Amino acid sequence: MLDLKALVRAIPDYPKKGILFRDITTLIEDPAGFRESVGRLAEAHRHMGITHVAGIEARGFIFGAGVAIALGVGFIPVRKKGKLPGETIGQNYALEYGVDTIEIHADVVGPGDKVLLVDDLIATGGTALAAVALLRRTGAEVSHSGFVIDLFDLGGAEKLRHVGVEVFKLIDFEGH
Ligand code: AMP
Image (cartoon, rainbow, N blue to C red; front, side, top):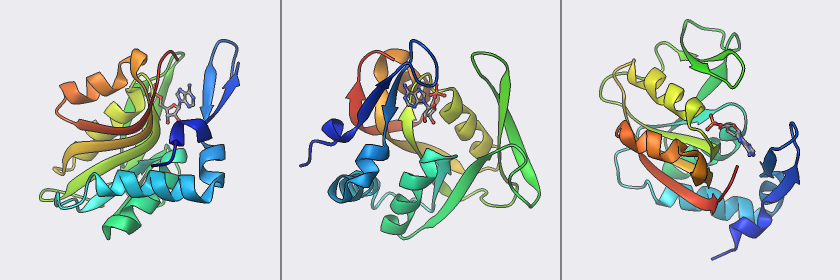
């Protein structure tokens, strides 16, 4: 197995002072690293009856699209407010300062569908929890999630488990 952790670059004080940004562009520039991270996220969720992969804008699209292709299912973009052309449903979530909204097309999934949520990184879990709540409002089942990186000290994965979502991750980093 590749050392995926070694392929993630750490950039101090980005986007603001005190944040250690875990940059996955170095991982996806590496052909073996990109293939293996997508492949492992997909294999962990094979034979589970997953019908769709939902990826969170924007880095969740990179990995989620690959996982959807590998699993042979469709891909759902979970987008920032105002980007989707059809009828949408939205979910607000709290940011450090203020509120943000994510949206999906209202008719993209429903009862009987089983959605795997994918993003590059889980930190406080605010974004992922909002995505789970949004997808579940359609009647779809969301009980599995996959992340490349878990900043476990920030507790997001624990919050997801608390609402009945299993968390599969490839890399753990302590701190924030
Ligand atoms: P959160 O809602 O706190 O779990 O934040 C998750 C989102 O913010 C993910 O989509 C990440 O891409 C991004 N993010 C948060 N913290 C970091 C970090 N230290 N390095 C890179 N991306 C981060």
